[in-house]
Image (cartoon, rainbow, N blue to C red):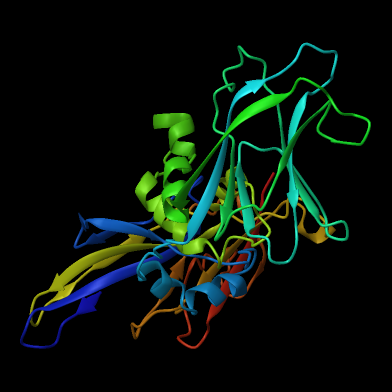
Length: 356
């Protein structure tokens, strides 16, 4: 219950953080006096942190992740030199996996290279060369016309050579004659290249349609999140753009459901946030005491600017569970399924087992 004790209407923004990914997104629903609020979902930028514990969740929520989600999108106007490989020639041979390799001089001053449509990468720092390669498709393959790009960030490659190989190992002695490609070089910016290649998020909602309650966000939101994550959340050693897109898609992060609400002067509004959440489970069962255990965590005030005067936790549908570990104070045998929460207790946990 939110109360406005003043003599003027007060407008507030409600923000409910929850963990998820673009791939599997189950946002909460926000209501005011029973009416659904128009809400937007903002993806957090995330980072190298995992979300395997409530402490890791807290580190993001209580950090600057929400501010980063509202921050201006980076321009990504760094100039890039793009090398596009087309008109591929795959000779008739008994080679297991004909491959085209691009080898170029490497030093600490060589521009960083991103790839799209390439499958292999190697570098010899002592010898001073780097190599990127891709398997040559059959001419009638549906992937024959897929883009294959080398993207030099902030400069251009001094020189490069093309060489065919019998397989992706690109080992000496495994050269394959007759392999060729046309190379087109052009200048662009990092943002323009990423925008041209970035797909829509691959989601459960797209995969299963109406058979799932999962939500999906737009390509624009996905691309903006990608731009915010480059140089911060996205691992620096991830140079294949397909991997970058996939990583942004499946990385578990904090999302923020936001809705505007006006509380009239001298009145109260009952706000509800409903978030179905599956239990945590030790799939590896590394610890025998966790076998068959389903865990739930409740945090009472992480990142909140509200001062709660009363909080209560309740259990429903307890007929088929037994409590194994907890710090709530529930007592199913005594019928105690609703308990008050201490304002200074930051974290509560509940672990249950099904009754056979």
